Length: 184
Image: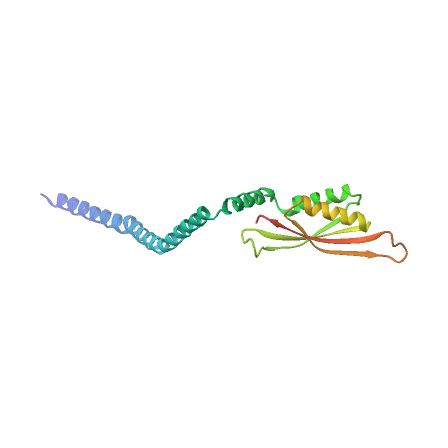
């Protein structure tokens, strides 16, 4: 071999060595590190997965052994179906206004007070509303509230304030507070 061939051979060997080094260090190294990190994360999650599987088994055992579980599941599914998927601002004022307009009330002014996490059903939120009617009749109000609470199972009247004026006691200003469950 002459000098030029030796130089080419050394240069090819250097490039091959550099290519092998780059492959293992820049391509395969990060993949191996990511694999080991993922394996560690999976090992950390395995006890949580086993615990969740145990809870599922216990829940299924309770459902199978409790004679009321099927009825409770049906009641829960019925409740779930009655809660609209939209935000409460999209449906609640229209529903309440429809009930009160059937009872002879003029359109009320609605105000959403707050929406907070429900303590009893943590997967849902509790939406609090206030509606004000400029004038109304107390007897019509009682009938309308009874129809509203009986017709809307998830709606609850939380407060009621009736104000009268000394000049016209027949016409009363009515403020009603409501709460209902909504999906987050």
